[in-house]
Length: 554
Image 1 (cartoon, rainbow, N blue to C red):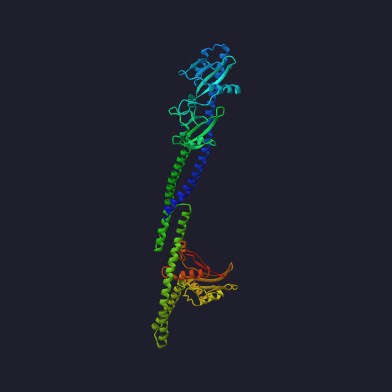
Image 2 (cartoon, one colour):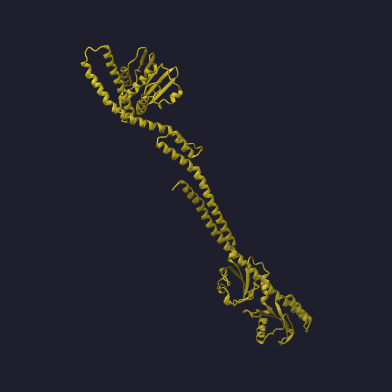
C-alpha cells in the first residue's frame, strides 16, 4: 500500500476510533442519566397531579362542611340559596340534597336536572360511616365508560338530618388539563378497579381496564417505560390518593422524554463525520508534505543507480525529511567518489593484469638480445637504455594500477620507516640541478607496515616532488615521530598549487599539466589501508609539503 492511503487510514483511525468510543460512552451515560432524570420527573409530575386532585376533593368536603354550618345556623327551614351558593362555587358537585333524619328529602338543588336520591342501602352505609368517622364517601359508580361519580354525606345536627352531594369525578379532568404536564404529557385518575375516572385528554372517551397498559394492573409497578394504550413507547409513573384508594398515572412519549439523547446522538454523529473529513484533509496535506519529498528521494536514488550524481535534492524543511535530504546531498559526492573508485579499481586490475605479461616478455626479450649485440654504436646503446627505462616506467605504472585496484589484506610487520624510505630514495634518479636532501630521526620507533605497498606510496610522493621542481630546486625528505606515529615528510620548492586545487586533489586524476595522476590515488589508498593520514600543505609559488603519517598500531 502506498503512503498516501496509509496516511488516510491512520488519520481516520486516530480521529474516529477514540472519538467514536467516547461518543458511544457519552451517549450511554447520557441515556442512563436522562432516563433516571426522566423517571424522577415523571414521579414528580404524577405526585403534583395527585396533590391537585386531592385539593379539589378536599375543597368539596370543605364546602359541604361550610354549607352544613350555614344550614344549621339558618334554623329548621333550609334556605335553598345556601345550596345554590355551594353548587355555584363547586363545579364538581352536580346535585345537593338535605334529608331529614328519617330519610325524607327536605330540599334539593340540581345542576343538570334532577337525579335519583339516596337509596335505603346507601343510607345504611352512610349512617354507619358517619357514626365512625363523621362523614361518608361512597364507592365510585358509573365509571365504566359512563360518568363516574361518588356520593358524599355529612350530618347537619341531631334535629335537621343530613347534607348529601353528588360529585362528578369526570370534572377532575379539567383540573388535570390545567396542570403543566410538559411536552405531550398526559395524566389519568384510576380507581381501585383500575377504571379511568378522569383524564387530561379532553377528546378521548374514558377507557375500561381492558384497554389499559398491563403495567397499570401490576401492584408492584411504580414507574418506568412501557407501551401505552395507543401503541406508543412512553415513560410513566404513579402517585396514590390514599384517602380514596385512587392513584394518578402520568406518562410522556419516550421520543419527547429522550429528545435530548437524540439531539446528543445527532451532535456526536455530526462531530464524527466532521472529524472524518478533517482526518482526510489532514492526510492529504501530510501526503503532499511527506510523500512528495520521498518521491524525490526515490527518483534521485534511481538516478544514482544509473550513474547520474548531479541531481541534488532541494527540500527546504527543518524536520526529519529535511535531514534525510541533507544527508543525501552530503552523501552524493562520496557515493560518486566510491562508484568512481570502484570502477577505477576494476579497470586498474584488468589493465594491470593484461599489461604485466607483455611488459615482462619485452624485458626478457631485451635481456636476451643485448648479449648478442656486439660493437653497437652510441645510437643503439642509447635506444637500448631508453627501452629499459620505458619498461621500468611501464612496470611502475602497472604496479600503481594494481595497488589502486586490488583489495588484498595487508601483510603487516614491524619495520623501520627510515630503512623503507632509504630503499625508495636509492632507486630514485635525480636530474642535474635538483638537490635531494635527506634527514632521518635516529630514535624513530618501528611501525607495522606492509612494506611493499608502503614503498609504492613513498615512491609516488618523492617522484611527484622531483617532478614538481623539474630541472632546478630542492627536495627535502625527513622522518620524525609525532603523537605516537612515524611521519615521513617530503618538501619541495616547486610551484605549489591553490587552496581550491587542494580541495579537489584526490577527486582528479592529476594536479600536473601532464601525467596520469594515478600516484595520488595510490598514496591515498595505501594510507587508508594502513589507517594513516596524508597531510598536504601548499601555496602558489612557495612549494608543497606532504606528510605521510603511519600509526604505530594501524
